[in-house]
Image 1 (cartoon, rainbow, N blue to C red):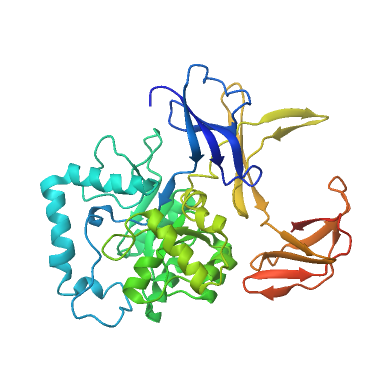
Image 2 (cartoon, one colour):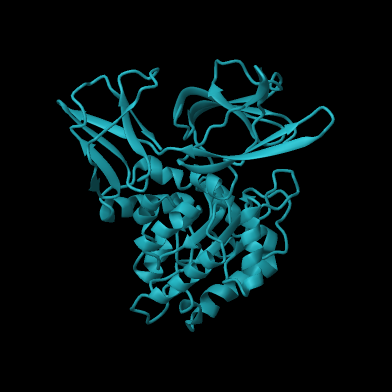
Length: 443
């Protein structure tokens, strides 16, 4: 993009401080990065004096990020293997069906060979129509075509020319491959990987190997994980990482799907992926509808609408380090006999994040200090008559609920009521009779 752009309208942000702006503006710089999201009448950021302004007259919503796709196959119809009645139990079974080659691999390969560029543009258009602006799973080409409509996650570098996302749909071959991905994750890069796909308990061994090889970490986006249960997620949660949920494809092939409530309760970030059209949704908007239906019919509405939408927007961005690994400029402030480094950063989701503070002198000498930021999960309060009910995620067992009558006070008192487990939440009822109390979670 050569010139900056301003979009105005009602803006949905997923920012807890300002979740929606009725009259907002999104400022997109010439570098194709968002410079600001703010009320339209606020002063514009520097560099937008001559920017083109588009008054949308509608709602501006974050672009959907599809962390699980095989775009080369998305022109094919839904696949129903002839004569197959029972669900599969493993990803290693259905590619061996006698109809697979003739109904799936041969048509996709032929279209890619005969009309590769036109085919890809058609498939990307289908994704864009469903709101997708970034997709994992590029077409069968050595590199993406120029001027793609949808960001290819494997190749997107945001003009840095540095690869940050690695992908493998097939199991890693040997220990060297695991060590390579573990190093990528240690270096704050991302790894998107099909893991424990199916219902056969033997598939848990794939998860165990990932744990043994130190590949369960922030930056891992593990697709499917349908064989995993609560003990696996409880073990995984403190290590960091995300699971990518593809409910349509899971149910179509295996008659079961990922235990997303167990993942959420353990602190494993949940993302959404459409998979491919032979067994999944046609695009991510369709998969959002499937997730919502499954939530209402089988999860008793445990997931809020905002949580489901986050699975296709801010969650995948954070999962592959497109979100909270951003850099903020701070100040060095004199304070008596030492100097303080001050800066600010907004975290979208609860969790433990590494914070790197780098100071550079006028001579170019740098020093870096590493610390940790603990972002508490949200706590909600509902009040009926004189009864209060405080609710927060059960995985946040190391957080303490505190109360105070004043936000400015430093004397917060811990609640002595013991919480009860309600589904995947901790709940304290009748916590106070004072309707003017404030509550917070604190480690």
